[in-house]
Amino acid sequence: MNPIDIIDKYYKSNSRAYEIILQHGKQVTRKALDAAKKVPQLNPDLDFIKEAAMLHDIGMLLTNATELGCKGKNPYICHGYLGREILEKIGFPRHALVCERHVGVGITIEDIKNYDLPLPKRDMLPVSIEEQIICFADKFFSKNRNSLEKEKSVEDIKQYLKPYGLEKVRRFQSWVDLFERT
Image (cartoon, rainbow, N blue to C red):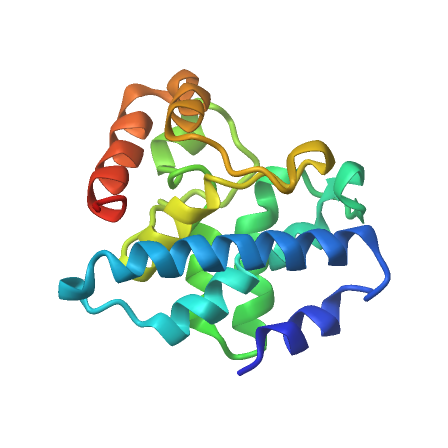
């Protein structure tokens, strides 16, 4: 499976959204592979990580995120489960779960209810080691035009997560402890 072929099927090659999904996907892939190499004892599937990290944001084209070149009708927070639907339809259910479970540090059904989020009422937490690695790596890179190139610091990410609850910060810190070992 070639993730670029799938991206090419859904995104116009000369669009802002295409440029962003490719650049962001490559950044997340690099960071995810670096993280995976720190936990060889957990036997992460590196080929799967390469594919799924490139595809984790495939659903963003169905959202209303004009700053990203996307003119869909859904709020941006929906891009995860919408990506799951896209990849399930074309026969990649394992990759599809990465799409749904990478948003934030994962979203619980309680989060969905408490914040009245426009999402299906189910837990969307990264479960497999590959899902956790990709979710972790994704937090380091923005899709914002002004900071697309820059990797965020661990402290900046934790500050961003803090308003969503200390359990989110703790989950991210547990990944830092696991995947940032030297």
